[in-house]
Image 1: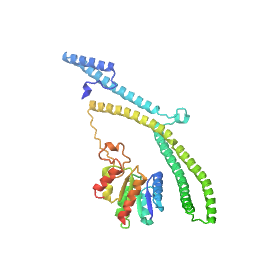
Image 2: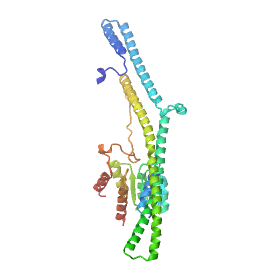
Image 3: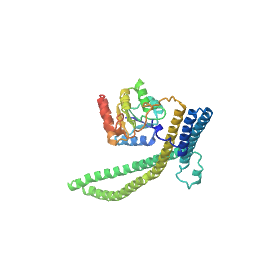
Image 4: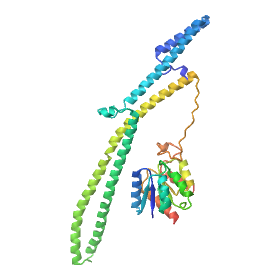
Length: 261
Length: 123
């Protein structure tokens, strides 16, 4: 293990120095047969060890606390500053992201559903008019029919301008409905930063705990917890780098056809 | 043609409903998980089931197995539209008797192709 070479993380130089010095003294007193002194030194040594452990745990706790305290999106707002648990706050923020994206998706779909019939209406009338127009060009049209067509074309132009405005307006609104990305992006970035900070601190705690385990000779029985594919595990990230995951519909189709589908 | 769409997210149900309407299927109902879907299927005379996999309550995979185990429903065509992308899962779904599998995110063209393929086979 590299632990013997590398000074323990968080072990201050003066502590390390003290340990070295005491170890040397211990060797000397043991050699000289001064066992009372040796025992005192051993006690002192373990005290130094305990203190440095406590200090390390204390330091990590402080930085963890700091990381959680620093998690604030809008420090100007008083009620946010008063939020008791920043972790709860983080899940609230993610809840807000779900809500914002949901609203934007629904708003967009409302507009799309409103616009589609307008577009198909224009298309239908244009097709009908083109047929009539061709009849006119082939001189298959009675004067009365022509007068009717004349009025219809007029109405079509008026309607076309109005429908184009509707379509254009709805497209603009669809564009505006995407403004959630800016807000949700900021929130997600903040939460990501918190998660990263907490992860780092947790990692330090785990490393720390493993040192404690090493010193005390503790062995833990940790059961492997596996996610159940039957329950569903959600979208796969970095699918193209993984063997056990399909990277798209083509992969699915290949897999299914290899199964005789 | 009566179709049941099962997904826990209303936006996804709405997208699928819209795409189905564009394909000419206007008679659709919605459910948000297997537990709500199964009684609807049993009483509703549906011709086609489109379901997500990962849902709270009863998953789409369990719904698929329940449908295949039911005497009246076992021949119902089932299309999975899901983000579940593990090979094992797709194999499991195929073995459980799924008729088509579409991974999210998907396109309108893919959904259309899979649905047409399923109906081609049935006829």
